[in-house]
Structure formats: C-alpha cells, structure tokens
Image (tube, rainbow, N blue to C red):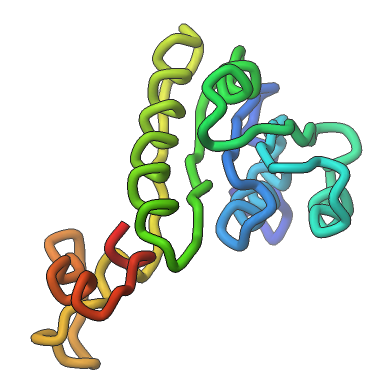
Amino acid sequence: MTVGGEATATGNGQTVCVTGAGGYIGSWIVKLLLEKGYAVRGTVRNPDDAKNAHLRGLAGAAERLVLCKADLLDGDALRAAIAGCHGVFHTASPITDDPEEMVEPAVRGTRYVIDAAAESGTVRRVVLTSSIGAVAMDPSRGPDAVVDESCWSDLEFCKKTKNWYCYG
C-alpha cells in the first residue's frame, strides 16, 4: 500500500508462497509481496540457477525471500514449500509445444498446489494466475474487443492452430 508516496508494510510477518517465482508473472508478484513486507517462499526448479539472480537482488530479498527447489509435479516438494504459509500465488506452468507435456501436467500440478494448500492448515487464500492466452485466442472476437471474466479462448481454434499454451 502506498501512503504519501512511501510504501507501507502490510505483510504483518505473514509468509506467502509463489510457485514459478522465477517467471515473468511470478517475479513481479514476489517483488510486490516483498515491498509490502511479506516473507516469500518462491518455488523454482533450481534455486542456484543464475536466471533467478534477479530475485535475490530485490529489496527485502536477503531477509525475507527463500527460494525452494520444487517441480510442479513433485507433491512433496510443493507441500514443503507451502507448509506454514498464509497464502499461495500459483503462477507455475509448463510451457512447451507438446500438448502431452503441457496440458495434463499443468492440470495435475495445479491440483497438487491446491491439495498442498488445503493440507497445510494455514493457507487462507490461493490465487491462480493466468495469462492473456486464456482469453486471446478467439477468431470471432475483434482486436479492439474488451475482454472480461466471461471471455475465453476458443478451445477448438486452439487445437486447430496447435496453440497448446492458450489451450492449457
């Protein structure tokens, strides 16, 4: 929250898990949570990978960010990352051109995240994130159309064009 141009801490010592913390959406969520004073557990495939260095450079990261090694399909690793958290932002998703390696694993991984949150006994909210891909692929909708929660990509069109990211 911003008051008088200064960020005000609202985290109250709470811990939040962000799956896919190294990704574009996940990174921005981590940044905002740290700015608001939350402790963050971010799941990444490899915490030591140089591509996650930008997360360690965020303000507050040295004190309140822990990167946890977790694969979306590893229920035990997800449970460990989510244990004791007050909330979860689920941004992780496989991205590939192969529908067999994307759609079913994305669904199964999301179920694992939701199950881990439910089993934790501490998580009060789970936020499932998405992307423009969920609404963009509809050939009957014009380019200037305003989209909202009632708009979805045309699944048959996604299959026909083999756009598995938008299909998933």
